[in-house]
Image (cartoon, rainbow, N blue to C red; front, side, top):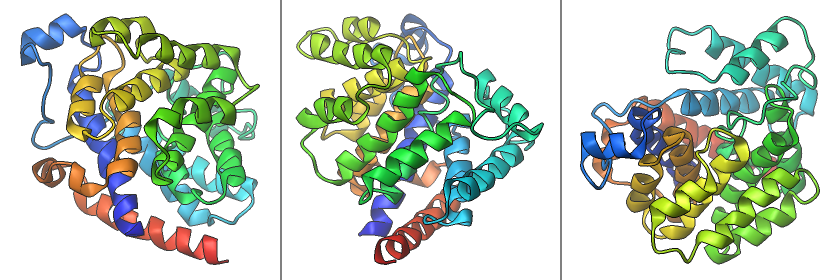
Amino acid sequence: MSVQQAQAILFGLALGDALGYPTEFMRLRQIQAVYGPAGITAPPDPALFSDDTQMTLALTEGLLHAGLAADLDAQMAAVGQEFIRWAHSPENNRAPGHTCMQGIHQYESGLPWRESGLVASKGCGSAMRVATIGYLYQHDPDRLREVAHASGIITHRHPAAIAASLAGAYLVKLALDAVPPADYLARTLAFVDGISDEFDQALLRIGHVQGWGSEERALTHLGEGWTGETAIALALYCVLRYPDDYVAAMRRAASTDGDSDSIACIAGGILGARLGLAAIPADWQQRCEKRALLLDLGERMAAARAAYVSG
């Protein structure tokens, strides 16, 4: 069961990312002109994902290489090396975020991981990659907080980005814990309390729009997802709108005016954790880029988590 949970999170986020990747820089009216009134409804074949999933995989490999019980410096050294490897990879050709690349460059140039991130940037690049932390440390929320925070500030040190990184991991934990979705918002705000008023205000807007009849108006009110706080808010709105329907939530997340791949990637990780592999269409899974790697990584995540919990 634990293996399938890990794999569901990986496929959930990767396929959400792949669905939103073709529409990332399109306005909703353009998406509808190309794909029809319902927007994009299925990922391409093959389902190629963006830098969001690539960085998630790099982060996860770093944590597994260092060990889940290792100290933060050892973990972030391993994560930092994986980020550097990704930054120089020929596969890093899918519109990587400026802040992520600059933060990694500063780390590679010798700045410590606690200082390499950009203080002024609250982009969503640190929040989009943390879903697996919510799985690996599901049963240790204090450690989840520490690792999510550390993994984010390598590239993003703005308080709103830090809060978004913690929230992105914690929402996956809540989903795995079978917490009712109606409780996600309050529980997440409590978990990140005191870090960023900007983040808190962004999430509180979800409560304003949940009862609105027009999803498009609600999404516009919440933002476009380029920043950490709006990406989490939009992803959570999609999850709460379709808590039991992975496909519907991904279609909604990927057909927006904003950062469609990041919104769908974050929402996909949460709903993968909540609903499991069976909720993700089998044909989508078959066409997913690096399918074998995702399956193998899920197995290694489960083994590492079991060892951490028992140790």
